[in-house]
Image (cartoon, rainbow, N blue to C red; front, side):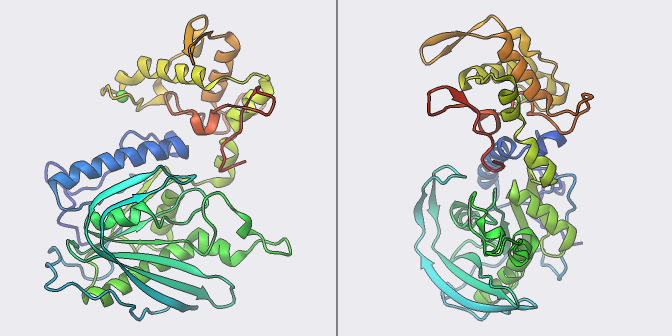
Length: 414
Ligand SMILES: [Ca+2]
């Protein structure tokens, strides 16, 4: 098995560890807040590493294998390009059972690039981006009326010989925005795909006009597109740079985490390392369980303001943060946190300039949300919201049309 010579930890050992070390197994089952936390931690780690090394990303969560490189891999860094490769359309080999519909190339000057906020990601500004070539490949599969786009960004300078596959989130199979450019800045070729489906939270593609499941698109979204994007990406690299990828990595959270697990399971030769954070697996249970906080508040006919929910979160962090040995504002082991929300009953919280007294009903709702759904005998059906985790996406409340608080529920599941 070939190892990436840059994949070392601070002590010089091979880097085979999670890039999100605070996430417990339960936390991996919660999509959004762990996803954001992992993305933030990953970004911080990337920034630190970028100062030490020239582009490095090589890690795998404990539950995911680090995959040996199928082809012979160089242990040397890519030589600097003597000349900038021309940014032109290249011939791309169609995957088996597929046809290449189009290949387009567009050169970008780099510099400072801004990406507006979307429903799934915050606004992002990336500076000092080298000029790069973006090659877009569109693939269709025989017998399917699909049009799968693969985006590949190839830096003019600073390429380390590495490829980074970029995962999606919610019902988006990939991300054609900031991550593709960040990869270029970090010395990677970036690769992502839309799987031929819509982006964000729109799942209308999944059902055909006659009401049946669109199996072709479902296959694209589930696994086929990620695998083929890896194959397409390596093919384009070979033709663009006239040399093969040395090492390839997967980077994804949430749906991207799920894609990483899927790749490790079914296409282990695609990537040398897989970073699969907050994988949205066990979807039929997990997605339903995300609606638990909404269910609790509807059942109790008691909707807790975000301000009070935040007070519970803050109190839990204060109580349990140091117990994992690192006081960093994060409860690494929420399952070992014995903080009781009833301890906040009777205290006052300042909310929008008003003093609110925390009630027993507030604490009951918080306790049930943290405990998670149970059956009629009290047996756990799924993990609850981890103590100390951001409540916003799963348990956040908002005024309804009449001004009274409601619990909208996790938008990926409702
Ligand atoms: Ca801590």
